[in-house]
Amino acid sequence: DQQVKQNSPSLSVQEGRISILNCDYTNSMFDYFLWYKKYPAEGPTFLISISSIKDKNEDGRFTVFLNKSAKHLSLHIVPSQPGDSAVYFCAASGYNTNAGKSTFGDGTTLTVKP
Amino acid sequence: DAGVTQSPTHLIKTRGQQVTLRCSPKSGHDTVSWYQQALGQGPQFIFQYYEEEERQRGNFPDRFSGHQFPNYSSELNVNALLLGDSALYLCASSFGQGREKLFFGSGTQLSVL
Image (cartoon, rainbow over all chains, first blue to last red; front, top):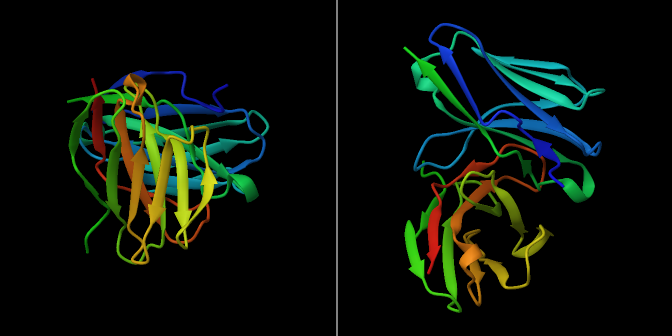
């Protein structure tokens, strides 16, 4: 049973428009969520995170929204740039037995067209 | 400041063989985690080492084992390789065992024939 799901394998947007990537989770013990970006032949790179005590965290063009009741989070990229084209992974971790053990979704491939 | 380094970059083995992958964490980091990423999937947690001990373990068989050295570097060993072990193996480092962000290496691509 996959505890973190990214239901859209791919997303294509025009340069300058908004990209919205979604992620759902099932384990209520998760309380810390992260987004990573991965380019080909490289390891994932941390992008932005959010704690469950917040519902929004913003860093430049990137904003993550958390809806705890729906167990859903989303990553907004505004404006999207061609260099944002990559695979985006949602990850979750929690306290105690889940501390330090991140559970990843299968990723969404974002393509930003010039 | 060197990031996380992994070796080798690529490896080809045959079924039944054993393999050792190596990882040096980012400077200042003391915790190393290993992940397996199959094609088209997200990274799956194998285990985490902190203070030279395995602290957390994912749903992987005992064929997967590891070690952390006093300088915080780490090895992942896989015995009796199966075709299904073919994947990208990622090492990630962090400071402490907490829930903070991970710094990943570029991975070792293992192919089992």
